[in-house]
Structure formats: C-alpha cells, structure tokens
Image 1: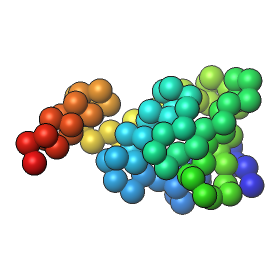
Image 2: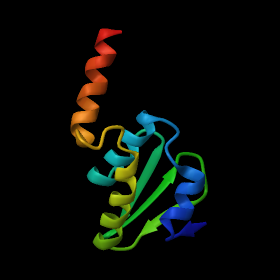
Image 3: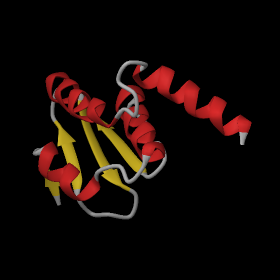
Amino acid sequence: MTTTDFNDWLDSNEPADNGDAYALNHAIQHKESCGIYDVDMKGKQMFIRVDGKDEWLRLASDIAISAFQKRVDGYCPDSDMGWDGSEAFRKAMAKDN
C-alpha cells in the first residue's frame, strides 16, 4: 500500500524516540535507509516505510520531499541547535554515561 499523505503516514509511523527521529531525518536528507526507515528512490521520487511494514509513503517530487522534511523538523529534539547540533549533543551526553 502507498500513500502520498505524509500526515496520515506519520500518524502510524512517527518516530518513537529521538533515535528514530534522527534516523528519519537522515533517511530524508541522504535519500538512504537509516535505522527503522527504509528508503527506495525511483528517479526523483522517494518512497519511505518503516522496516517490516507494508505502507509506503511516496514523495513524488523535490517539493514533496522538502515539505515532508519541514514536517519532520518538528521532531528535532532541540530546534535551536538543529539536527546536527542536537545529534552532537546527544552523542556527547552518551559518552558521559
């Protein structure tokens, strides 16, 4: 099954924690599978699903990918630091534990 409605897709596939959020962001930015998210590129179209699930999200254009990225940015743990800063902070804190 494939959908183009990313809000509906996120209702049942949203990141469960910060690690999943980073994985989804990485998958979108690098157009490659990461963590629990599988990515399949067909031309300029991006297809994303959670590993083991049948429901794919189809992002049919660069505009759709950018719109989805903006939606996923809402999962960034610290919007002031952005994804890269948040990830660096998370890794630094993990070293301290």
